[in-house]
Image (cartoon, rainbow, N blue to C red; front, side, top):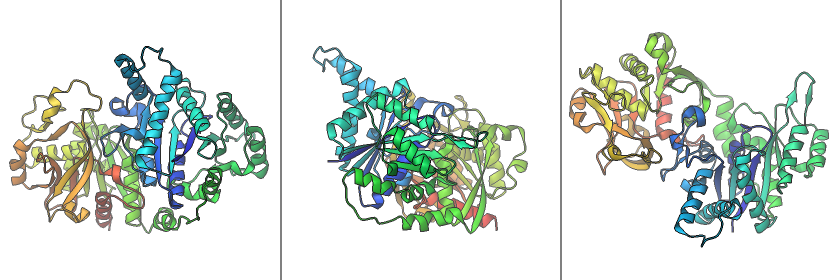
Length: 534
């Protein structure tokens, strides 16, 4: 039977519970254990698919088409855990399921309540993931901050689970904050004491504390926290700020987190270390031999989390090429007002990520026009691929009014148009082309050179597609259809001849990139940008 680790957070949000959970998964896998990781989100949305990026940040997509929180991206980047729609549990999903059962009469006339019906639903969903994946350890991250009303059903569910499973089968880890008060020159433990106190009020006693801090913790502080929070001194783990998130597993290992977890779960395994991670990732992150500057042109540039997987995948491409990637964030609306030559003059490559809506679109088209004519390496993802197609149709094929029906319903010619089955869609949630689909790649293309394979599978999240009615006209002028979906002949990858590196893909390769296994397209893109910079 799987053992469980429950990760909660206190004092403030954005403490990095997701990174902590992912790093712990990395440490346990290095010991030879198979892991699963779950994110419990307390919002009432069924999933984040219809949420504005400014509200939620990036929407991460799994192979089976689930739209999830961006923390699942951290889980996949750090570990080998197989994630699915069941790896994301939201309050919306839980209540939807319980109310559906009530309407069917499944509860046989009983009064439906938070306890036991909502908490039972949460517990069953958590146990289902552990059972389906046949894992040794299931890590469950509880979103939000202890004290939030909306998190209480999840906290009650994990309290019950630990009581049912027993202390050797379940462990509570609490991520907390030790704020440094600069005016007083002191690091304060009181917020951590209060946060643990709130947990204990609802029946959860954490066995390990991960203390986020910008200053090292003294032995005296460790003993004080241990005394007032009723944990072992060795269980007060320093989670000191690091320069790069990929240093976190090594930092936590130095604190003995993995050994402590195994001890408390009564698991005995040899320590294999993290040498491959340190040599293959950290050395190149800390002291790369080269540097390259990439422009990312988007519409949510003020929010770091809106393009989280894009930024991480670019970093992975840099690691694979032993280079530091510096990102120039460019708001596409600025390119509508200003000359792209001035804004993009110092970059060695440009990436346009996915997105929705007409705002800033003409700025992105201007950027692609400049990039194509000046032979700057270009990578277009989802919307970025569609923008590249529109620009090519307008300025190479002479179709000056070419557009997408997303931005102009009456577009003539509509070189990008709504997928046929999307035309009857009324409910927007979970109704896009989502998840993994096959792609056949043509030999002799940049994509084939990168993948070294003619058959791949990549994840999608979109409603609009390349319009095959204009395929021949664009191909005649030099657009290369480098990849297509074999089942429906949908265009998946476009390229341009006589260009150093110009690739657009309809799918989202960033979701399958890892620091120690960069996605082939990101690796090739950064290599081309480095060549441009010579």
